[in-house]
Image (cartoon, rainbow, N blue to C red; front, side):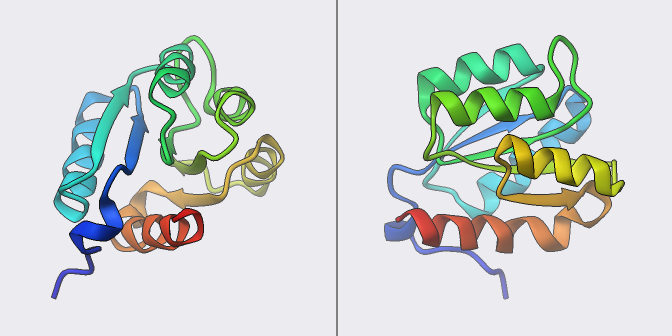
Length: 134
């Protein structure tokens, strides 16, 4: 059985996916759109684009890679949280080092998920964060 929110829980929810690798970005978009079909989903390919799109769309959830061109995901998280304080940022990365997680939390991230576990951990984390803001 799929763990998905009902339509009422997903009304007016906006999710921004920030990932420079097209294959991973498409995988994240598919995972999110299957689990949250009524939500608006936007994409960004680098840190600067992420900040601009977040400022324009005011996302509820941002899925943020760390290793991005133009501006890394930690700095982009900090700037997004300044521009859109309500946004909940989930770092989705290959970096499992504690120093990256600490830097992400200091920048304002709400959660940290390793890409190798995103299929099992990401949707429950998003659902938990959405329940805190709705």
